[in-house]
Length: 516
View 1 (cartoon, rainbow, N blue to C red):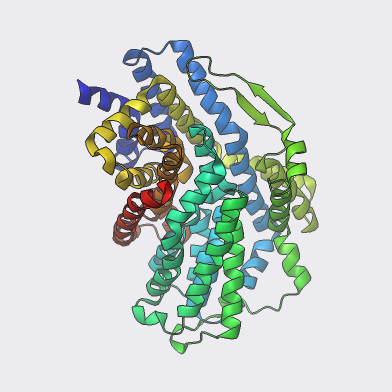
View 2: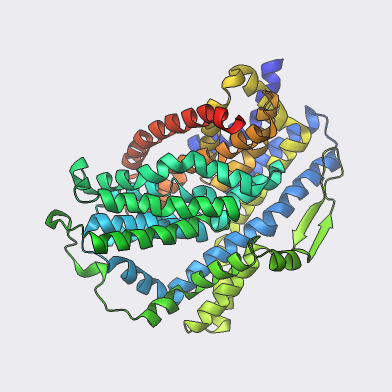
């Protein structure tokens, strides 16, 4: 009976594993079905009234639409607008004009610009866009996607202006800055390791590291130091963007001081772009992203007076009236989507786009993301139904019973499985964020250790991006090489397994430092 209840409570998650990994069902259909399964299980086996099931799902839908989907839509609209105005070509030229060495360009494009795109838009853009650029400078298609998968393993927890951690903080009712800091600490080894691994993969041999130790170190430390400061002081919204910009600056400075030139790795075509670009042209191309950075910084907790005034414009409503229900607050101005949208329109205007054109592009972006909207609403609604009905707590109790005090060793693994299932760190944090907290409480962890274990879900979700079938498919499609997914998955597993062993050990051993 004990294990039967566990399988019933786990049924929505088990369904997602089967439907997405085995049946290859479209995500929006699989997630809608998961919501139906969760609702049925909550009513039949956990005694939840139908009106409370509906309220729980509505509570999840509210969180999905504001602010999560609003941020995602506006971030991807910004990218689409920069492509539409032609500014993306200028950005490509800026990145590729620094060096003729492919290894340096891999760091700039996959590590730096890829992390920037993850921080801005997420949802596959950090793999698809840099992979296409790398193929253009002569990297083989498989290796181009492979290095982008490795690069995307770090910033995914902070993608789309920090949506995964913001969402998980809301679901688990925990401090977003604390979760951000702990997740970043857990990812530190990979921040330093990934640039070296990417260079080896792109160069097809460990010998590719000759002359590249300093640039790789600059790429890692350039992301690490500002990233940690942002994690501690601001939160998840600007971490990936700040780290990406600083990493690119560090690599450029390092290469200028200590040139990494090897004839064996020279770009053989002019596709990297040799056009001379003025400072004005570069600033104009980057303006939407620069405005987003400035607006989000000025409205963050670092500028307390502005933050408090804007945050006061809000509405609070109780959606779920059952036990454990909390009023949901809609912040109408001080939410990242507002400032992303404003930055896009202002930057697009400077780049020559008319307001009518931008509105049509926004409408097109929303339409293209319609299935993503259904998927995210369904996933968050499912998580809420599982949470309020007690299903999540039942799963947590079962896992804790099986693992005992060793649970922190597998907490990050659970987060990575969530990304494998859904292809999204956000969805993983939604599905398992409350489960991680419940599991931590079940083993008697204090509040600080509860945050450490919960944060490991976001860290594991990031690592899970490496071998997510959806990310691999996006990368293969972006370079027009469908059919290479099997080879990419073989590569991804070889990286994923040791990464997860390292992360699991770090989370487990880190308990002593956190509790101390």
